[in-house]
Length: 218
Ligand code: C5P
Image (cartoon, rainbow, N blue to C red):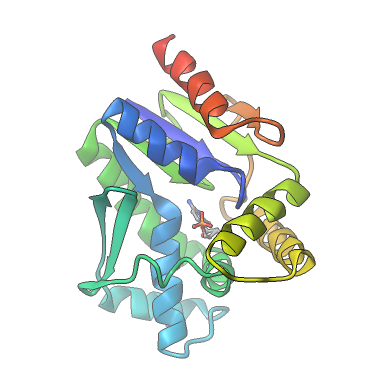
């Protein structure tokens, strides 16, 4: 069984996908982490993220590995644990830039399909998991929420980490990333035709999980 969960940044899809995979005992596949790992390397090497050839070149030389962990997944880049280093707004933005290149997507989509097939039962999360990676997924969920609510969630998350970042700056970044993800020609962020849309603006994580578990049972 493959459960595909897509949606924009801050929709709550990562938290839901992680919890759901734990409850069901399924493999959790975080596709965004792979774009982020490439973005991290691109930044380290000082490569222009808008240059597809340079990005693909570096992808041929790196090894990305996802390993299950207590709080979701650990990400290894050439053996180095980069799990926390890839979770910054800056890396998210570079990830959105490199994710616009069809050549980059082709390489990662192939890897992600292999991971899903190997797992048999998986919760796969990203932007194109129900439209491109697994168009035949057993259950497709598209999670969404207003940009303001998504920015507030991000702001609270950072505040809890002791970082005081201006809310309006975060809102601007959320909207920028939405724009990059929704306007790209290859695999733009959109719900699959047969996806169930869940607006999480006024919903708790547990409410969303229960709704999805109900759908799984059906
Ligand atoms: O989900 P996360 O914020 O970690 O993803 C980072 C970026 O990677 C997204 O903004 C998006 O541009 C890209 N991405 C993608 N396709 C996926 C997962 C992530 O294009 N399946």
